Image (cartoon, rainbow, N blue to C red; front, side, top):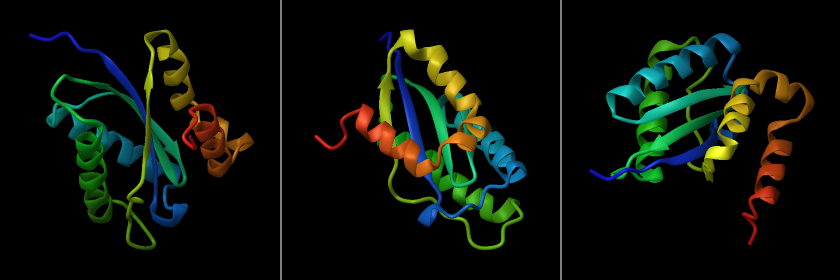
Length: 141
């Protein structure tokens, strides 16, 4: 049996970054994603977000890929959201997402960051967060 621990921090947004996630809807959606991930053998460490995006902390197994995990989470959760949440319009995720590896020494920092999304976004917009993330991880190179 292989011993693998690959920690991933993934972020994705609602289609057109529309603010469709009230706190209640966001909490229900995150809880559903946790339950669904468990059924699909996705080790979801943490999930949280804000009005138009979610952050997810995942420990990948040796047989998983980021693309498969994201497809399973995003596709099923948008379907579920349209059936189960009180929404003013059709719910969709953007096709894009970003994901980076996280070292074990950064575990608590990333976990706390995800836990504190509401507080974090009182100070910084999602666009500002994306710009910082892309700069810090050299996505432009």
